[in-house]
Length: 378
Image: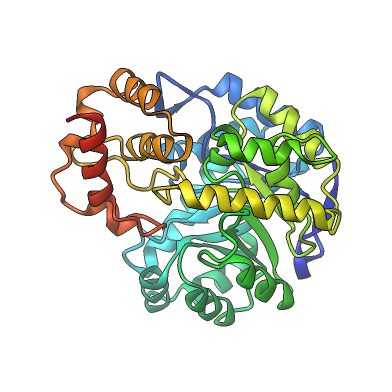
């Protein structure tokens, strides 16, 4: 496993981090983690060099941190840098911050969280957190030894990113980046800005919700075949990111042992500035192919669920992208009809708009669900 410095902290982290938002579950229920399988995966990863673990208060319906507390027992906690997040969405007053932190420490069975991040920061959340005294809270928590380093994960414009970053001497930021999102949200501009200020930069959504690995257009596959080095689509996506020396860690939510082992093998060659000009040109070609086909800018983060009307929004939108990116209407219609229950289908949307209020990608979800209904239900 290769390691890089986490900015000005001086800590060293594996370039591949374990994201705990998509752990294996039972009965397709996000709140029922398959603890035996998830523990096996996590401990295998740590035993083979992965030492950055990313969690959040809200992951797996609030059950993710409690699982980690158990999985990191028997000496595993001491082997990792543990990052988790304060839910900006749930904070209603200054006291909430203290209460959530104490709850998280208890769930994680630890006295100190290595990296404590504000979760999914956007303009409205930042204004609210400032009003409630978040900077004072962070300083107090650090002084009391409950957290070691501070940070934030981010979903908004480059201007807001710079505003948040300049407001406090953060240690780390977590941004969405992949070869499709160079100019989206913080983007490459934000990556460079943060690195110049000495922050560690952790990357989420490297495969864009899995789309860059599993939903490969035929034209894109032909581009990859022209490369001198034979690599999987997932490897191309990871290597694109690790080529940036400013990136410290790339997160991946690995819920199958084959995926974990494949990603660790890819990470063995994740050196900065290692891609050739020709390889970068191939990535640019594939990017244009995807951008021309993608209908919905959805990463499958699931912030939009549960929907009050029961619609499985991420799954419904993914089938719409299947049609536009892969052109396989027949198969997409079959899966939509078979794999979604009647209650989960897009036609149940009552256009309440709650999903759009929390969508970090600012998708016009109601409009897209109408299109899903037209294609798959009418």
